[in-house]
Image (cartoon, rainbow, N blue to C red; front, side, top):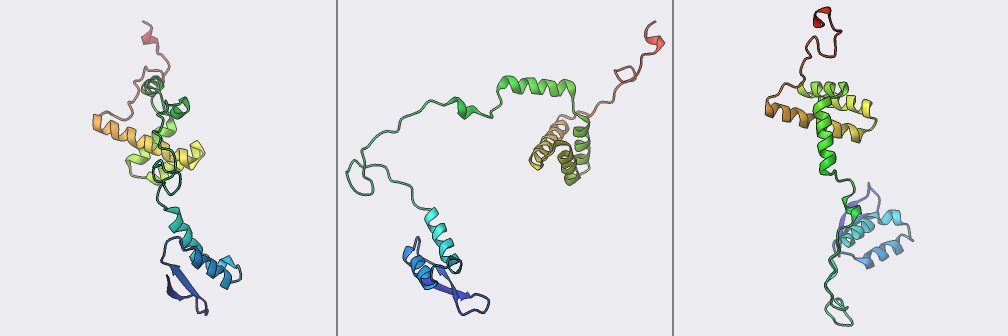
Length: 180
C-alpha cells in the first residue's frame, strides 16, 4: 500500500506516499509511529485529504430501508427562482441608461489616458494608472478590460476614438462675430 519515495534531506525517516485512496489505517499507523507528531506525517495527511475530497456523489434513493441507497424515493421539487438569485445582474433599463450616458458624456480624462496607453501596448502602465485612480487592483483590471473592449469596438466600427472639439464648441469663449 505504501511506496518509498526517498529520504528527507539525509535523515533516516523516509517520506511515504499513499497509493490507496482514503487509507485511514496507514495514516493512523504513521501517527502512532511518530507519537502523534502530525508534522512528520504530512505526506500521509495530504494524500488522505486529496483522496477523500473526490469521493463519489451520493446515489439516488432506492426505496429500501437499509444500505447505501436507503431512503424513500422522491422526485425533487422544482423551486421557483428567488429574487436573490438575480442579485448583481444588470437590468435592461439600467444597461440602456448607462450606455446612453457613456454615449453622451464620453470618457473621463483618466479613461482616455488608459486607452492611449493601451493603443501603444503599455498594458501594465495602463493598469497602474487605473489602480491609482480607482483604488483597488480588481477594479483596475476590470477598467482596463472595459477600456480595451471599447477600443476594440471602436476599431471594428472604424470610428475615431476621440473627436476634437470645434473652436466655438463649449471650450472657447464666444466671439463678437457669433452675435451678429
